[in-house]
Image 1 (cartoon, rainbow, N blue to C red):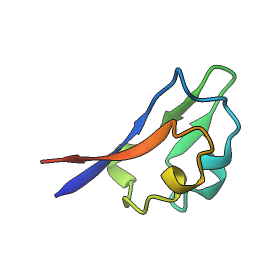
Image 2: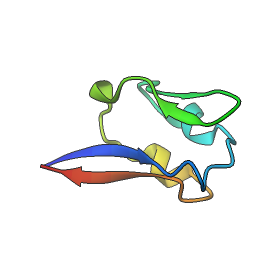
Image 3: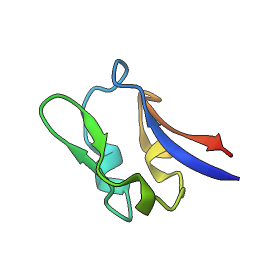
Image 4: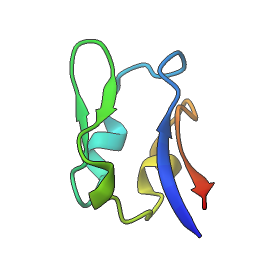
Length: 63
């Protein structure tokens, strides 16, 4: 089962922690929000989810 990254923009404080810890650098921060540049390159490691202090980013199981 594959997992995809989900960002809850309303919860995100734009701290950039998830961006810094992503080993494949698929996340990017601009003045408005964190966004996913290329979800196909995600390795589902969960480092973004583990580091987010606001639970604004997580991995969701998909089929």
